[in-house]
Length: 115
Length: 115
Image (tube, each protein chain N blue to C red):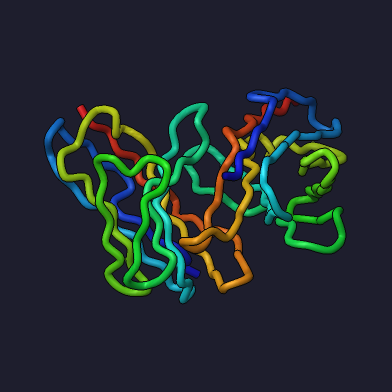
């Protein structure tokens, strides 16, 4: 069964600083990988996804993520953080099993942004 | 641009009461899901439906039942609510084929408190 870990529960960065959120997954085959963002009191919004091909994927709001098969990682990055990026970020892995499609989410990383 | 719509957004129940959370999607997706979100635990799958007419248990199905009423609608029922079911519930949908797993689209969530 697949699993996802996000080692950092809470990260604080200054506005304008760079950001990297870590995600490691466990899955026997090539996974489908996702990053979602959740603002307080809101649902989850897709930032980006990796299915195949180029291992560096671009998403919305200036985010990007890099798939590294050798490290089983899919880290999220942004070169310059904005105050509006303060939110919770979830990494997820999706796979097809005998019953259809299954997603597993990491526990999330809460991002705080200092002015 | 409705996407995934959940009702109600807020509900307070007493222990032992029953209720149904409603979910509808207008994207013609074949798969639908119910997740619960608790602090520090990410999203955990309660039930999912790979296609109309099928439902399967997820990670935390105890105390819940679901109905896939048609392709659009997927309801979650709590027959006898318990305080441990206090949580935020998210409905989601996705498009899947035999080899493709699309991303999840989420509703805005339903915050349930069981006293």
